[in-house]
Amino acid sequence: MNTKLKLYDLMPLLVVLAVCLIALSLISFPLWVNLTIAGLSVGIMIFLMASGLTLIFGMMDVLNFAHAALITLAGYITASVYFYLPGWVTSDSLALNILVIAMAALASIIVTGILGFLTERIIIRPVYGSHLKQVLVTTGVLIIIQQLAIAIWGADLVYVPQPGELKKVITFGQIFIENYRLLICLTGLVLFAGMVWLLERTRIGLLVRAAVEDREAVESLGYEAKYLFVGVFAVGSALAGLGGTFWSIYQEVVFPDAGLQIMIMVFSVIIIGGLGSVTGCFVASILLGLLMNYVGFLVPGAVVACGLILLLAVLIWRPHGFYPVVVRR
Image (cartoon, rainbow, N blue to C red; front, side):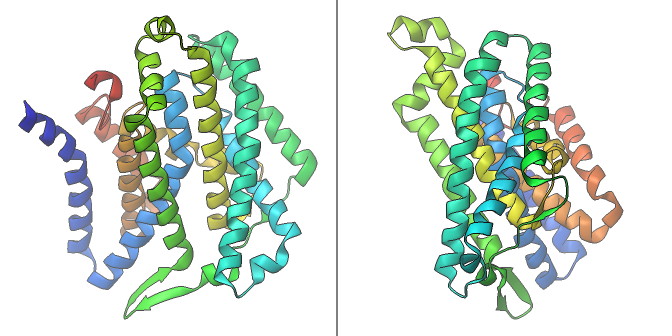
């Protein structure tokens, strides 16, 4: 039994390794390293944006289409922080560059977290259990936030440049590593470790997971499940803000439909990883990021299709995803 369980857990990781080795056999080693590092950073960035929706969609069974608008809103908030602190953005000090991103991320987290709290209390709570109504009301929230963003920042492109020192590259022979990609990877790894610890090692995580399984049992112990759910929704929305900050800086631009354009990737990694599984979402994000970079170099025209092909292949192989929380429990 334990051997089967370990093999079950290892298979997705072996798929990631296989993709890397196949790519290595097709391209030179230095180029492979560069593409792999770039793919890891893109994958972790996808995880930053998808991690919040993993909690909301996977653990609360809520289809939150407003998640895309929160990602976009975070980009605009980041641009506003840049506007008031231009010297920090262009500074030659790495510390100031990182600090301005941290301030933008904090502002985005606070705003999107509050919006998530209000959305759950006012909009989502009356429609629990009805996916159709959830799609309709969260789409309405998406449109409202999008139109407010246009009213405040306009419909044109708003530039969000990478801070000066973070644009620089660390060179090892023919291998090039951008400072900003390193920051993305570090942030994503810390977030992943923190989420796993919170959900698996703390009482709050235990209560949230128990409430998903049996709400009445948790309430019989004296805990209010509705407070747990609003907390999960607020945290999930705040994580959309964090991901939106890093994504907008990576793209160096934000526009009204920015969040919508990446939601296919976000939903794909949530489904591939298994609903409610933070680990599955992380592994799926890494796999998609690597695959997109390798395919983008080898067959540029197939980048868009590779994500959908990956989703289809995984659903045929494992209909519930890599680490389906509900099935395994």
